[in-house]
Image (cartoon, rainbow, N blue to C red):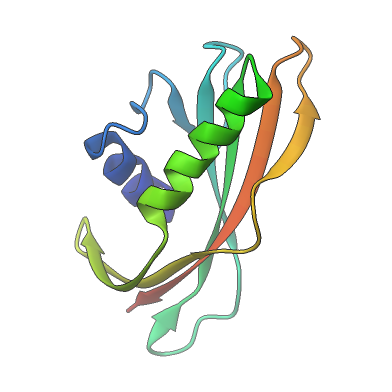
Length: 122
């Protein structure tokens, strides 16, 4: 599963710590600075490739901090070439556009979102 692999990868690079300030599928109210990974179907798979998509949402007390956290994620996971995570071979993970401001949450914290496309060998 893409979110599991990316969470483990980001944790290993010390971008964020899973369960502390990085979550999958649901972002809790705390801590103030956090990110969440959401997986979706980005295209029809074929007999050789899967094409999952990933949405990353970051949050922080300042817009600059939320944007920097997103930039750290983008820098860590964007690549072309083979990357094997938990036995899964990723051929590419690419951003679909740039990080977008998503306003403020109910506590006034700034949020950014960004989508990524992946191509995975079966």
